[in-house]
Image 1 (cartoon, rainbow, N blue to C red):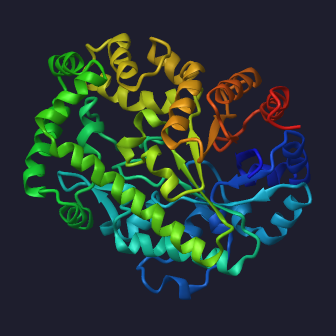
Image 2 (cartoon, rainbow, N blue to C red):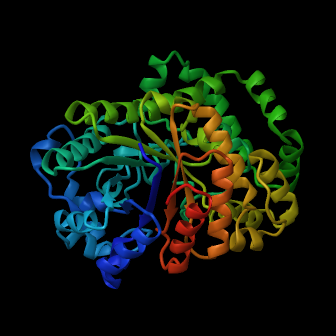
Length: 446
């Protein structure tokens, strides 16, 4: 594979500007691969591929055509002739891949609440579907099979954040309740639906022993007092401290491994399905940063087993806006907690560096050096024979200089490719050109 240079772009923005203008800019920046958010919904539906699932693909397609999603409108995308769009892109030496998000769908869960992730208290997620549910697996396998069987020339299928959690950590919804760190990440975010429970028992986990432990930790994490916060901040100051909780509750480590096995088996199932149809199609998988990917069941070291490319999503200028949301919710419930206190704990646990102010974290994000560390960490985990494509921020508040610095840090970290993130909308056009200019400057592209 030649050097991977791509972008996560918004079709409706490109359509409004003019596809020729947008494609010309991408070509100038050296971008050869485009992943449009929601592109899976632009392909026709052939119902024979969905006989093993209760999910009707038109449910999500009709919803996004009318309402879009958290990344904006999808009207032009869904109503365009995607075959003609792909042909036009190809004339600019750009390939439009198949991005599919096997997890998040509020309209599907509203129609089929039994498909949702379920926490220890029996609450169901409003939008996260459980990847161990047979209907969920059959739906996404059917959708992928439908698209690649009826549309020639698809070169890459990108699985966007296959994970297991109660909510999407990159887009923290308003309905998420505050829970103290790090107990949520260590134990609580997993799923206790009947399918996950059955799978856990098959994996040798004594679920009846586990549940009281999770309930106890959940109660501790939701005891929202200043004393409890300070106790946990003292008890867990770093990685070595975390080991004690596994020594005290060794079953938790099995539980985290189980979460990873659910996610890994889902991706592996897709991989086998695709390769049986067309072995040349690349399977790429989008993962959050290695520092906390395990909390979703995403294990970098396992990626070579079932994917061709791993895409590390680390938008350092934007991540603060997401990561600060659950922290602020804690502060609302415990106003005595100063910004520096809660951020000190956050940075220690995740190994990040950034500002001491919550406003600054939200508005300016993390230090760019974190791009280097997360890239290097990911590359060491997967090994030399597996490709790490680093997803970098291109959206506001990132400037052209921010993009250039991020490209340089990813390059120093050993990136095998680069992908510019534009999905949050209204990204400055100069950021796209800065992305390509820096890649040319450091010799990654001509």
